[in-house]
Image (cartoon, rainbow, N blue to C red; front, top):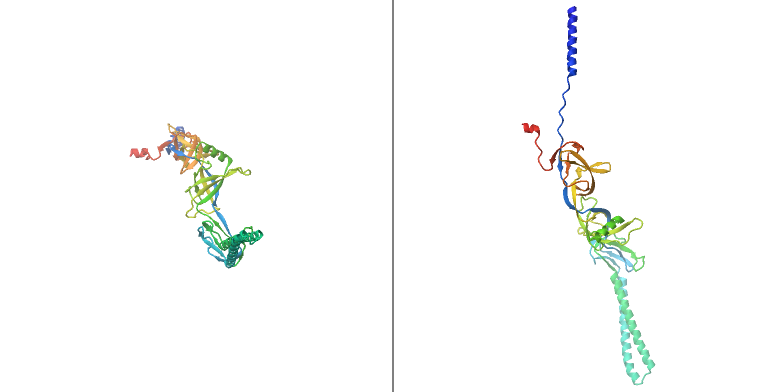
Length: 392
């Protein structure tokens, strides 16, 4: 038993000695990870013109209501709803028979008045010789002279009546006053249409021109002042009479593929909204643009200037402020707050806060921290080999 107790004591002493030795040994520090690899690039220099964007609507250059000019029953419709028509195309015909009858009647009246005039002229010629011979009195001669003048007036009146009747007969055929697309018909054949110049005339259809087509938009007073000053400096921007080039895109398009020009700026700023109306013109040979359609345009808002651009993905946000991460000569990351400009393709204009020689992190931003070290790799160069690759 004494020997067994002695053996247990020796085991306890040995365990305590081993534990004491283990607690006294310092732990080995873990190896520090290498700095993360990031891709850097210097800002791109490019000549830029700032663009202002506005939303507006297309309007037709010509929008004409086709109305009856003579009253009668609508006989024939020569067009279909929504058809493209040319100027002068026959669209509607009103019953011509009453107007043809009227024309024949006034032509007969004209023939009769001309016969009366011929008789009055011959009678006056005979009276001229008789009054010289003292065969008739001067009063009788004056009466024959007056009869000739009345006959001449009757001829003139009947000639005017013939011209009016011919015009009314011509108005029974309604032709397209402009080229464009006709809307749906408002009256069916067989209905009585009212013509004339009063406001209750019957409208038969509406025609809107399509090519070229106008685009109307509004911009604020501050932009108007900026455009005016740029125009005063000789720049072709916002200057009345100057055809400033602009670009347009529809709601389902990417970029601004359509090119047009500003041809008009209004002369009054609206008091209620503080905006002024501008107008542009676009070619529309395939009829893609339709009056009333929404679109967005880009208007030049500055003279050309040289700007620095970086990829849009390289820009970070800190609440309302924007920043980029740059790498200095010691490969330390620095955060620089920048002022952004417009987007040019896949790049963003940097107006302030960045220098042309800065190395901007364009890939691997999530791995970089301000004040930390990185391993920069210039964009477009192959990656450096790892230490394991060198050892092998």
